[in-house]
Image (cartoon, rainbow, N blue to C red; front, side, top):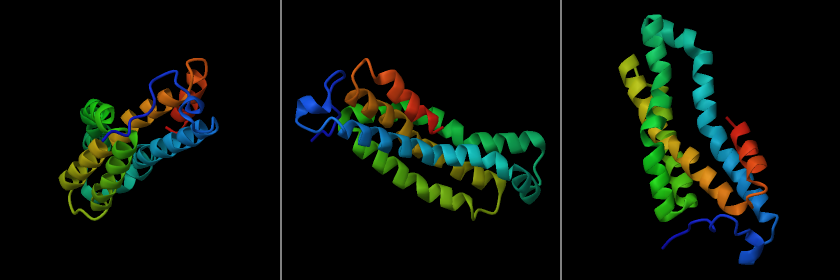
Length: 157
């Protein structure tokens, strides 16, 4: 069973869905991008608190703050390959729902290493949104509209 998006240049109207449905897909792609971006961009705002809480050096704090994006880097390609096999809905949904647990865990850990590990795993799972939401947008927008659509999606970060 595959739930993959239509191939590029095949608009939703051609598949029988209303043309406006592509804007729903774009909105979902933006929302999927906002969640991981909120974690990634929000961590530096609490950097001083993390530094004090764990007694970190500036380099240690940098490593802790980089854990989330490092996890994303490790998994963005595997998530993309999985999106090609099972579809964007499954990948975005499963990845972001699963990412919530390690993000929550990171808030209650007692050490910097455990917090960093939780953030790394959260980043690995949250990378699903990067890989699959771009694929979904590309599948629903014509080549003449993809630049705008992907630009809107990237604004979420």
